[in-house]
Length: 442
Image 1 (cartoon, helix red, strand yellow):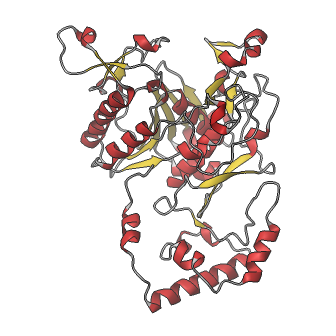
Image 2: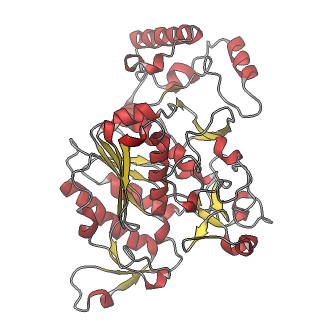
């Protein structure tokens, strides 16, 4: 699914054949890079050494004179177990959000890297996502890393992240999947903050984690549809009873002003399988005047309402806006060629088929996001996490979670067909990779 092309992307589209001086500059840059890498100097850590002028296909892929011996050597040192790239011979470019397609890549196994937190060490995790604490016996799902094909994704650094957020407010807005990403980011940074320099203030809809030394906040606001609904404050479990006001975000948006970085998401609450009871304008009977709309239709109306608010109220010189694409669900094991499986239960490894797209990701919704954002006046950076997450059939909370505020009983755990949660993600886990990409954008 394509999204609005960046300015640099547009430039690449019209780029013709390189003139001789440009070719020479590219060749010199490439030779210098090889020499520096062999000297173990990490040029990518220095912003002055970002190589953006030569695209990979021209500077590397189409370089017919590449030394065949070097190719062979590179292949021979790849770890057969996890396909990790050798840092010296890795020919990918430093990450640039305008040049890199994060959806093109693969999950590689790397047990040598310890997660930055655990569900026992981070006090801010909900029991819903604390899989190890809730009895999940396997741990391999915590050691997979997303490796982009063309670019090197920077390692997540808690101190660098907090410096990026110094003096700023970062607000995640959305549903429980967005709350998971918020919890992930808080847990990824909180361990380096002294106890007396951090605090959390929990509210019904709005929760604020504060890093006092950095004068920074990482916040979450609950708005599962972004627009207003009768299920915002007191959750209505039966989706048939939920009613949305698809033309209004006013009740929620008062919490979105004065924020430096906004990260929005909405998807899974729309995918109940039922039509969406929606109303707009001034119906004489209020909510009783609703109409039942197909989910993609109601979703488009709601997203346009959100987009209009952003365009009218956000100053892009003061606030950056992000939109996280849908987090896939994994309810149908036949999608990943396991017809005898029970949803995502017992899956312990990612499904590696390139380009895999399961039935738990609605392309109609993806298309709506692309079309609405493309027409917005305020720039919105899309965090496209859908393709990479589609492969992670192994990383959901399954039966190692809670329901109705209580952990599943042994009897409930035994009924994996009805009680496996294949929507939410264990933490640490997949949302950590989302945040690695998110912080790379900053």
